[in-house]
Length: 226
Image 1 (cartoon, rainbow, N blue to C red):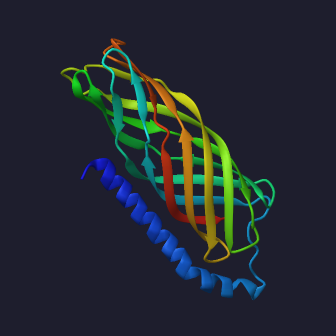
Image 2: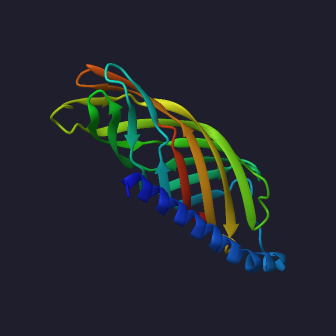
């Protein structure tokens, strides 16, 4: 089984486990919702979440000279996000995480080419609408912008002695749900899709590629409301 398949299977298993846990807790949470003490999310609140995220690129590429496509590995990493509620329903979220990916060119005139590895720092800011901020089960949707920084670019040597990725902006869409365990502690499931492209230069521009990464980001974790 490939690294990508293992990563995707792990992400799916984690997401299923989290959704199952929420389903088990929901009746208990719902039964306690009428205690009168629960306040929910309010304007001026600040939430910090710690998630585990699976970053699943759905990449394609236009490679000059040798043709072919790209294969970018998945990654599973911790992620920290900060959310501020402007109103009860409207919030802004900023996520911070860094990922590591192995990259290959496939189906080229040179066969499968190892392009080494690269790390991504993709801060993403979204504006969110929380449908039921005063309820213990509170879904939301969001849209925003991403700026991805490519760093620690490691060329493998041999055929590829140098590789460079351009930093780039992209759009982001998001859907998720917070489930209150206590007044302050929330479980969270979150899915984002980024539209992310980069221009890649191999061996000082001898080969160029326009790569669309377009990753899905699947996260689950816990948040604390201040």
